[in-house]
Length: 393
Ligand code: ADP
Ligand code: MG
Image 1 (tube, rainbow, N blue to C red):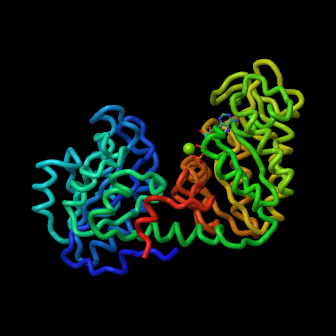
Image 2: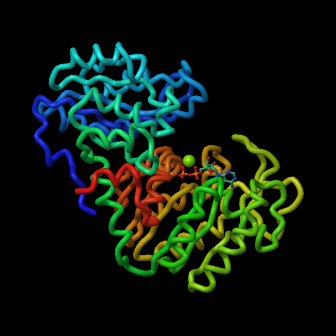
Image 3: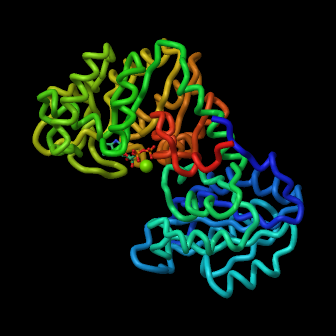
């Protein structure tokens, strides 16, 4: 698909309203990972260099009912200001008089950031009046929050029905970077899927059963498949209500000649912690209070062997509870191995990127590292994403 991008429009003196994805991980009021803010800088700098006025908008977290102090964008505004080396004006709402005044006073090259758009329920409801209100502040809408383009919300989709919409440089980079996966790719083609839950990954498994030679399963989601295969998973995270679905997917894989691989061994423990006792055992030995919390050593090596022979690899989701040291090895070893394989490597997912950062692995070691989790998966499933559809030329 051909995108209209900010390079296709004269921005001088125009007011732009940019949807960024500043849904950053926070501990209290501290940002623990600023990747998403850094990823937005090329677009913001481009807009500054081309004489535009800049209004930024984003959601943060999941506010339940109106404003929540911990979910205000003030720490984000501060961080952005540091990273870009310019003042950032912050207002305490995303619509209303204060916003109107700030927009009126805005000069070319200045940055204004609006408050968390999800403080208004109209955002997720994609309310047309709310979208129109947001649009009224600007001449041009720039879609650059790739992590949210799979959502048809007012700030990602609705707004584009009121003012001309263009892709920012991040959305452009993501679409160009991921598009090769929608065409004919080189085989062997391997999908490595981990993470906690099956729910968000069903779509991609279904789509790639028909395309990939091998799907390697890890993380909590592999447990449900192990359970469906008749193994005792002890006290592991396991979605027993998804077992039927897991069986269907296994049958579908078989019919399509796709090998769906579950781990033969696991790191287990009776509890989760930084210095708990663990054991590396065969899956057949899991029972009772044991929780499967990482790939076993031998399984990790087996997965790596398969990944080394692949020509195209997609990886989403840590294969273990990598946040805790005793369960980080599988994810770490696999990330390190993928950084060196010959095949093309496409990675994505919030926690997957967090794991890369944690282990000090450069994004430049891979063919494409996506800032999107759900958005990346839906994009590579071949779905039409609402926030991208509005950018069609
Ligand atoms: P991503 O954000 O990269 O798409 P997910 O959000 O799907 O990844 O999953 C990441 C989460 O899955 C992490 O918090 C990790 O601790 C958890 N996880 C991985 N393996 C297990 C496991 N065996 N048991 C429990 N949680 C797990
Ligand atoms: Mg995640």
